[in-house]
Each structure stands twice: as structure tokens, then as C-alpha cells.
Image (cartoon, one colour):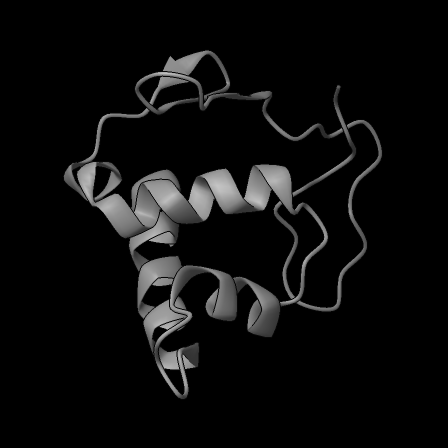
Length: 98
């Protein structure tokens, strides 16, 4: 499935015809992420919490951040910091130029 996207400056509309690169995930067995046909190999994808976050995002696609944080760190009184750090690891792996 493709959706419209561009790389516009903030506040500028997205140019018609631009597409998100295709995203492929394999979550059964070893985690595999492929973007635009290119498999992502990044050390942070070997982190167990990053893999668990990807699985949680697949299963609970529209879950709010607080729900994801509680799901991954149920024993912490305030797991939001852990979620922010783990999201940064994931973003760094799939968007290395951000």
C-alpha cells in the first residue's frame, strides 16, 4: 500500500504524486524491516526493547504513547522516558539522516 508524501519544508503542502517508500516488516521470527526495497541493518534493531516496540506498534497500531509505555514497562511508575529513548533508537535506525 502506498500513500502520498513529500519532503516539504514545514508548513508547505505535500507535492502531488510523491509516495512513501514501501515499508515491509517481518515480525514472526527474526525482525526484518525493509524500506523502499532496502533491508535495514542497524545495531539498534538488535536491542530487545526496540524489537518489542516494533511488535507492539504492529499489533496495537493506533495505541497512544502512554499505552505503549505501560505495555512495555508495566513495572515502572512512569515509563514514558523509556518509551522516548526507545523511539529515538527506532527512528535512528529507520531514518538515519533525521
